Length: 422
Image 1 (cartoon, helix red, strand yellow):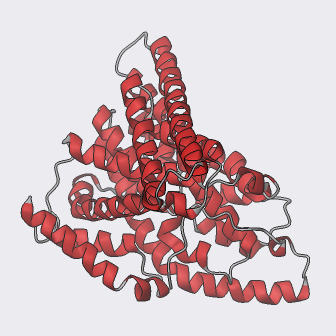
Image 2 (cartoon, helix red, strand yellow; image 1 turned 180 degrees about the vertical axis):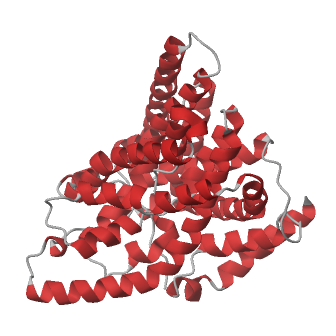
């Protein structure tokens, strides 16, 4: 264990020291940490060996997503976004459900043994996107602001929206093991979502009121302005666990409630929350790389490979095209936005939760998720710089001849994740 922690610390230090030049070249932190994890993991030097069955691993991954969900939802400027929700609302309201349905259909065709419930679980695990895997796409100002905002808002919100569907899918998969559980499944769904909402609202109100009143009286020191939201995220998560609800829903709702009640949703307030989430995410990516090859090889088939490839292409891109139909978006824009739907941290966390629950055909489902995320880490990371350059050139030429094109509509960026320094 000590040697593994030393290796992880050295990897984090090494990446930190060269993070800026790597980012400029489109080499993301997820790529570096995953590759390093493969090197030091069970298929390489065997320095970092992780037992997925331990609760510590699952809690670490859960808390990583909790901090990022709370941070993202705290930063949502609802008033600002309300006037520019056209494309994001289409991606979330039309594209996300269609992606789930396409994933289910693909699963039934390629992996019929997992059944409808298993295909539903797999689809919900892979419907969320992670803009951090292609950070250049949402940070490069050469990309139209409307496109960046739509992808950024979609990525920040869809993992929270996907949580209830994932929980329902897992319950349905487990219900297949015995009979007469329909009412129990519906009741459990209501408990997970409802109690998660209650936990998030309670924690958000408590933390938000404390922040607002203390800040108004000048009672809160600078560093505690950043620490208090961290405690708020933990509070939402722990209350949800105590009530038997979803900690992810609690974190997402808690962040929105905190931002509304505290009347503060800027980077200063959420920076520590995101920093902690970022550090934990680095550890998770190292652990993911350390286990990826060993997890995949025993159950890897051409059907699994086909599903992973289709999940990153057709299953994502066709729903995006339908969602953007009749919006004025040109074909290059539709293709660009459809391609950049990386699968990342949320899919890993969902995979661990599904494995912990003991769903049928869990090995096949986890193998498919692992391969999809692994491909996404490198494909979306490596294509971000050249694709952004090519798309930016097209847009510059297109906007010059058609300045009123839909892509050129002025749109403020409401950052859900902080811009990297360059």
